[in-house]
Length: 165
Image (cartoon, rainbow, N blue to C red; front, side, top):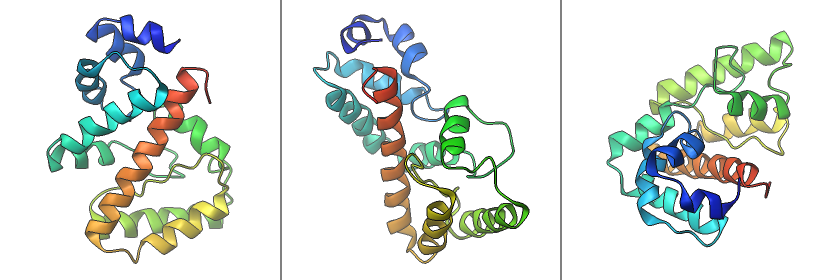
């Protein structure tokens, strides 16, 4: 799909085409549609990020909570499956799996939402190191970091959709 084609879509068709970019949160695409036309991938991404930033805290938290735990063996969106596979999180040995599950539980207990990391270009060792390091962040700092990671994931997904990845 091209940016020109996205600019021509109805709201419903746009949400159908792009609503998955922010994990299980098609409301972001529905709101961003109002800001078209976009001249670039960066403009589209910025419009979508702005929609999240302007949303109430509960909507932003719901967006973060829509993401699966890293290394999880539960059912998740295909984009998440591919991203986690690329980081080797689908082939953890038993000790690594136990470690990532423990870190996921500790993180969620501490912050109230799952650990989010744009894993593209990272390996499982980098993911585990990031989880361990971020457990020491303050609540407000980690909310900001989690959203920044959500935005990066969405940027990767948009770039892939537009053939710019």
